[in-house]
Length: 181
Image (cartoon, rainbow, N blue to C red; front, side, top):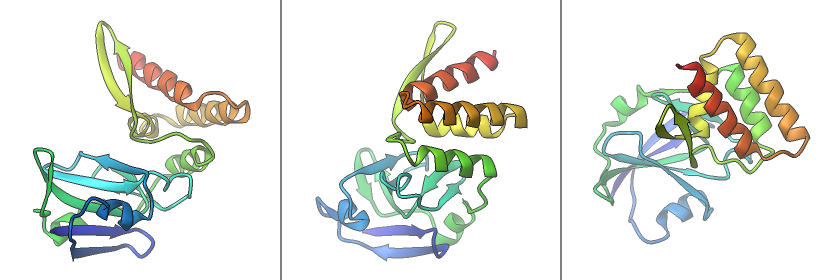
């Protein structure tokens, strides 16, 4: 099966031909904790769920924050297929420039058990919206400097007091929703 592999340490993107078996993805990352991200149309992005706590390199695929090595496969219905995006086109979507805000927050979050892609729900008016920590970071990253400083300060306080970081992130998501009107 044709796949793409991203190695942020060397900024290398490789075409590969893998044999898909029950443990292929787990073997690729040497881990049983894998995140599956579906933001790339007709593709699945596999990343190591331990990458944050291991302080691996963050980068963007389009606007999607990824951390550490990634394995990209095609996805049709619920089946993995050959990757259909060309390596050159794919390379143009990668951005290794990560803001200081992201770096600071990821450093703080690395000491927690938070998962960037685990979903939770918030309310906006009478609507229930499903979000994740990665969305919260994206939203606060585009905020003004004072708001970013507030977020980092509150995050640090919550971590230092051993508070539930998932609840803190949900609270920040709700604040962002409320501010959006």
